[in-house]
Length: 372
Image (cartoon, rainbow, N blue to C red):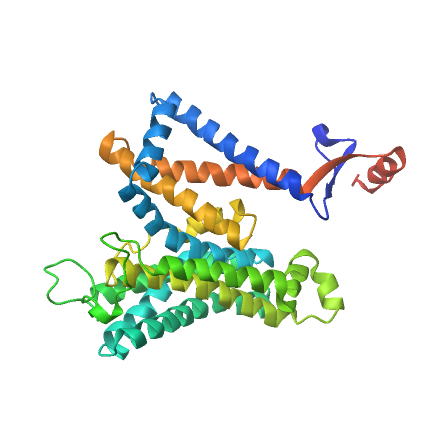
C-alpha cells in the first residue's frame, strides 16, 4: 500500500519500551495543551478562560464544602477507573464500565431491598459489596467470553451493553421495584439505614472513598508484585509470546474482564449506598466514560488513578459551580474532559510510535511491494 506523500521516505515504528521520563513529560504537555485548547474555545465563545479556570478551581478546592464534594465524586471515578485500567493493561478495551457500574448498583439494591433487608449493617454492607462486584463482574464477563472464544470486539460489545444495563435499570425503577409512595417520582424504596455507608461528619464523603483507596493499593500489588499481574502485562504487550510461553490467554481475558467489571460494579454500590440510598434514574452522569480518561491520564497506574480521579472530580465540581455562580453551562466540564482525552491519545501515539527515515535499501523494497 502506497504511503501518503507526507510520509514517503519514512516508516512508522513501534517503540518497545517508551522511556518513563518522556512518557511523564508528554503526559504533562498533553494536559497543558488540552487546557490551552479549551481556553481558546472558551475565548472564541466570548468567555474569559482565566476567569473560568479560576472560578472552577475556587469552587472545587476553595473551601471545605468544595473539597468534600470533590472527594464524593472522586470515589466512583477512582473505582471505575481502576476497572478500566486493569483491562487496558491487557489491551482489552473495556468501554462498558458505565453499564457495569449500573449492574453493580442493581445487584447491591437487590441485596438491600429484597434479599437481606433485615440484616444488621455489619453484615448487610459486606453482602452489598459482594453482590455489586458479582453484578458488575457478570456484566464484564459477557464481552470477555465473546472476545476469548468468538473473537468479538470487546469495544463494541461492552459499549452496547451499557445501554442494555441503563435501560434495564430504568425498567426496574419504573416497574417491579418502583416505590408506590414516590408521588410520581421514579425510584425504588429507600434503603434501610443498615445499608447506608457511614459518612464523614456532616459531609457527603462516605466509606466508598476508603474502598477506592484500598482497591488501588491491592490492584497495584496484584499488577506489580504477582505472577498473574506479570502475565497480564505480557499478554497485553506481546500476545504471541504469551501463547508460545503457554500462558492461558482465553481464561485470563475472561478473568480480567470480570475483575474490571467488578471494580466498576463496586463504584455503583458506593453511589446507591453512599449517596442516593436508593436505585434511581440518572445514577451516573457518565462516570464509566470518564473512567477511561482516569485510566489513560494515570498511564494505567493504580496509584496514579487516585490522583487523576481527584483532578477530574475537581473539574466536574468546578463546572457545577460555574453554572451556579456565573450562569455558564455545566457542559464546560465535559467539554474539557473530552479535550483532555483527545490530547492524551495524541500524546500516547507520540510516546509509543516514532518515524524512522527509510534507508535506500528499505525504500527500494517498499517500492517493489507497492501494488501496480
